[in-house]
Image (spheres, rainbow, N blue to C red):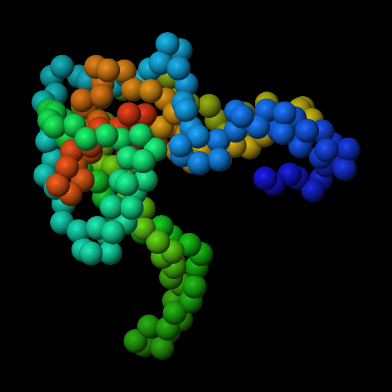
Length: 201
């Protein structure tokens, strides 16, 4: 846990006391993320009736990327975020993309120094572009970041929560589930929680 160094010892102790008192509601791993109750909210994806469904083919992977996908799929299976499903009209492929770190300077063949991003690993994303195209657009405006920061300005305390796997905590409506099939090597997987956090837009 990281607490701001701008807090006094007394304020820090109060924050720690509150967190310890409510330890049971804090998630420490994917398995701890129970999500919200489906009676409170379920996510739906309204499809334009004029659009046809899309079943994307599997994409080839090299051995390193296959290992990344295998690890991610096993992690999501273990956390019960995905599970196998035999068939659907909508099947979306995944894409393995590089996780970019900081910048470094490398010398090219002409002995010129050029900046280059360092790759620190790989990330598995789901390619929902066809599904996004067929989805009826939501006209609800997203809030502006400067307005959100202004709302926080007059508060003594606020908490910045990491959004890691945050969308997976939103249950998917049963009618929508069949649209979220993910094609991984040799199997179709259904995502249980809202996967918008990893969608390629």
